[in-house]
Image (tube, rainbow, N blue to C red):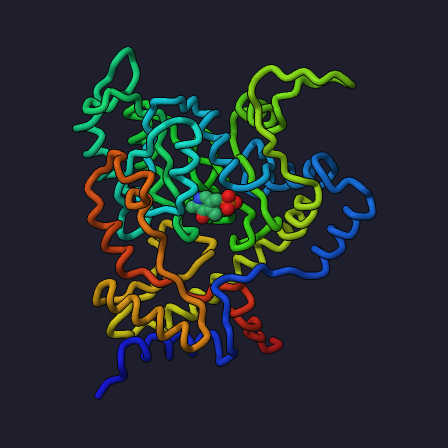
Length: 395
Ligand SMILES: *Cc1c(COP(=O)(O)O)cnc(C)c1O
């Protein structure tokens, strides 16, 4: 008789991560560089809203991703909120976003006084599906005074916000075409995908502007933090202005010309982020190796498959996941059994459209999103779990 399904799955995870008790889902990877930069920041006295590490982070983030500009902010949600304002999202608008996303995507839309309008995801990328979005918009959109409007609600469609789930880029080329065809700006929620590329170009550099997160669970962390990426110099200047209380530059006067936000990243957090950014390539390498080992461990699993991004995607492999057969009941048994065995695993998020505050929002058919919610289990993904690099024998 074969092994019980949850036991088999836990056993396969254990083959990769070893037998240590208490394995976390995702831990930050901190070392001597982090310590040195944070101590240097403390010694300088510049721990708060200005300092050299904020400027350094912005320069190095732009250079790493190839974005023309980066603006460091207090967290990824604030970055997303600011991006939506940059795109011109106003009260009464609608903004398309995936139902399968962390709640912050929808929250940022609401912060603008706009309504999230939920789209389904593709099974291969776990992100917005360009072809289904195109078919949906073809029925939905009416053009009024050169503006795309939802013909049923009469509200303006002000932005499309794809999210790169677990680091896997959405199918950006066709998605960008759809956005252009309907004249709707694209803002990327790249909170999970720093270091992921699509056709050789970094996620976060495709949209009008995009949001990155440095929360403690992301591929690199600032303790808490985020950034706005954009190739548009005017938008970058406006992002900086808006996120720093919209104060006009002056040697001593306090003059503010619009209602801005205190969304600055403190220099202390930026010091940590600069150190982390210097090891992003190494982390990516470790995470690719870990994903490869999971793929092998699950290659012949009869009851679950390891999620693999499509070939065109060069993912940062931030969070690994398996898709468990047998619906929500089996998914929950796997979560229970992993928990019993001291392995942190998690279901994916509740669909944003099912959260109490978004239940009345418009939505397309969400068949794929609902199926994925019932089957996805995220599994331990800390970079150190990849183990030591295979030693090459001396040639
Ligand atoms: C983490 C995350 C955010 C928000 O980032 P914070 O820095 O935690 O505010 C937004 N969207 C997605 C998809 C995320 O995973």
